[in-house]
Length: 246
Image (cartoon, rainbow, N blue to C red; front, side, top):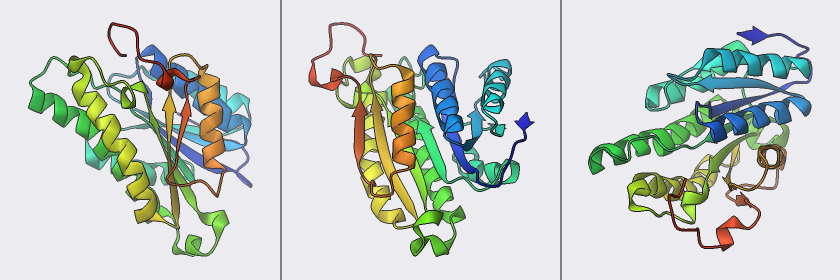
């Protein structure tokens, strides 16, 4: 589903990994879409296998209520080819994205054999965002090297497993959070100056709107690259309570 609006001054943001059945991912996805739309961005929203189509279409309608365009792009982030193709699909639907926002998530394979769980987490939370960022760089014109207005931004949304990796059952996810965090600074060097790359670590306490506002800041901050912004109300400073680290 795509909704049309004025395109004369629009920038396009591609949000991947946020149209998930998990309540927190869905909340963040909705907040991201509305926050970018309120600031004049058009939105391409990646929908993975099993994510409800009705929820995606409802979010398109919310974006349209802000007078912006939106499109839903079907892709499986467990497949590198699907992730890499998202930028081109966004270009076909709305135009070249100026920003990608990748929301990492647990793969749900904690009970699988370790090798399988690691492979699933690696594909979803490291390979996919790297492929997406590289595709963004390939789509960004070479003129962006000298023209700041043409440059793009890739944002990786991480979670508290970066700071508090326990329990052992969630080890694959925690390891990939650390890997994506490290990859953020490496990508910032590799893709400069055409693409800025930054990370955003979310917590449990802040409202999803706070996380979305931080993402919008990173998308529009030309002086920020290779950096990590933590939006968790100080949660990373406090040892987690006993029990599962979601």
